[in-house]
Image 1: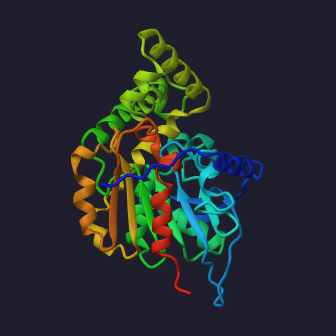
Image 2 (image 1 turned 135 degrees about the horizontal axis):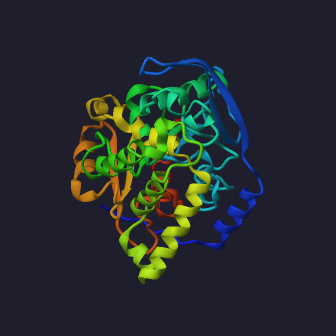
Image 3 (image 1 turned 120 degrees about the horizontal axis):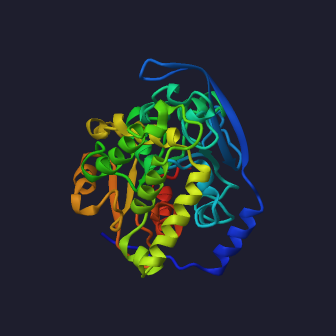
Length: 356
């Protein structure tokens, strides 16, 4: 598979600085009487979101420039405001220039500032899955923001998996799809193993107390360490910490910080949410052109499995790219380093540009 290289140029840095000075608009949508697939219901489900740009409607009153970008497990839409993402994509003349696009960055159910277990319900919060998360995104767009059509749906990690689901659940609603750092198959193999390790550590932790703990259980630290472990690549980790003492210092610092801001119930629910992810049977229903982008150093979605290359053939207008290991890749976290793959995004946008 071909590879494109994109140098970090001064103009890009200037765009990043300009965009950083323009914070996204933020809001909360209240989705009333939200019924989960588990049969549970919330009278009010809060979905927090950030937006860049302004919606533009055609003569029929349909918004045509909306872009939905969804985040990864335990993350939030705020992760896309960083210079390495927003600073490369949303600025003047960049692929998703906010002067031309209406960019929507939601916090998924259970994440960020959206409704989540740690708000007060703890383990009595409804058991949500990826299908619930996609439905909440759809209702946010249609009910709160007046968006019924999407120029592009893209997502990273869990958000990439949501993108695969979007394409088959609402095949006529978008022009293009770009799932990143994800595979169009059930969570299985090593990917399921590390998730189960964290899930079991929390649920079997006496300090968890059925979810009604007053202080964070010690198992949250294991969750933080596992996220640190899976999120990068061995070459980068070795270079960052070439001695035992340096590794311990970095790992402790990450876990210490996570324990101050994270929540065990939120992590538990976020990891368990992947249980209903099974896009395989619906891949042939995807109508929009789809470009999947993974990296060869992704421990969560290793290319040696051959799953992406096999399953993309079942997507009518699908294409897959696996970027090779390089000094710029960051393992699974490469999905947020837009300089690695922005050229492919441009290709997809040009391919699917509306006819004049």
